[in-house]
Image 1 (cartoon, rainbow, N blue to C red):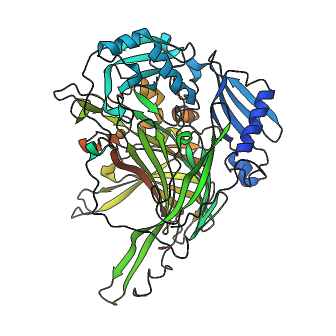
Image 2 (cartoon, protein in one colour):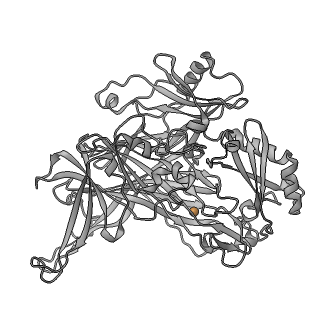
Image 3 (cartoon, rainbow, N blue to C red):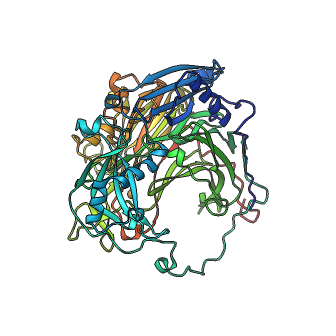
Length: 639
Ligand SMILES: [Cu+2]
């Protein structure tokens, strides 16, 4: 195996080659200086987010987009004052600085330093210590405090504060798995600005589950098996892709790779045969709502908007996380003080064999041909608290694009109350894993053959017996054009094979029909919270599988710009309020997907990957199978 790592210099040197390249460490420092000189960084101001403010699409497409702008979310940790700042590196100045009204706008995301702060605050609080002591837990050094974003539920004594709610787990040994030992029934509400516990809810007592979940411990996992023989992936002539800086080219595909502390991996200007397909693709939001209505009713994380998934990206290891001929890209994010931090090998690029692409043995002419599918993989992995998520984009030889999320890591746990508890599964003796959802939002800025796109909803059904269908076997498509934003909030329907076709309204194929790409959803449940639930107002994006909006450079975040403690209504429901025309326009397709997770005992103590995602396939984009020119996979195969 060869590490062909491509690591562009991200700490100094000349400015990036392309306006969509991620911000460099040097740029972050310049931006920080601009903010400091403008008086925005007096102590104790912290960065809750810091990233590239991408130029609007038209500036990139029509060029030249010469300015580089950075956006920062600043929090004064003494006063709670929160400021949304944009700086211009070209003009060396602050472009805008807006002070938020958090009860209306929402709070800035969780800070890195909030984790340590919360630990200190709860462990010093007599009320919390008493609640632990009542449960026989006297040594607070053996307790892990887990801060969870608070949501917004109405009481002003909560919602006026910058706050988190804190659950506790016992970790009696240094290497024990704390998630195996939840302290249930009690939560501390922590004000992050006043730096104190302002409320404790203590509703019931259940024994802390005792069984070890430490899967690193041989006593727990047993001896390791010795029966697997090596599989080695070799590409003696190297991979077939070219990675030049952030520009990636493979077979007929080309694209740019970006990365953001909040949304993680971003793909830009994805083209096939030099025909545009997507201007930008990313997963800018996800929410993980838990379904236990007891004292922990508030448990729902927006991993992107509240915790910044990209910031927690893993450094990937060749031979462990990725096999074969890998090219890596580093990612540069910043810490709380706006200082750059490089995550080495954050993004993995490689090729995979993917079994048969097409195959036929013809009974009449004797032809017996096989061609193998291959895919280009662009991925990264991130750890957010107990869960780990892999974000994978696949590009196939036949023009298919696939997005796959791999959810793994450790279940969030509670104590199992016994009986047939309706809201959780018992996964170890006395240990429960509450039912929950992982709902992702994909933002697909589609440019199928250009900017003039439209979306058709396509169902299939059988027709009843009638004069034109005497034997009742007819199958037809129902095609509905989604012409306005108000009409394009749609649910999937597996019983009708519902798909959404994104077509170009100005280009056609040899049949005179529009060229297109079809979105195939998985048709899993959308948000299960009640329509009147406070969460539903905040996670409006998750109430539909599909949304279509007119492109607007300011509409990037499906749950709004400021998700933490946002009272609701922001993001997609607000974006469509103007009910813009989306027929033959520059449009963005938003897709909600992800599993509703009823945990299994087999998901404990560490969960085998659960996959979810969606597929985009060319539909009349080509005039026939575009892979007839592939050679046989090996010289000895029939040609
Ligand atoms: Cu889950």
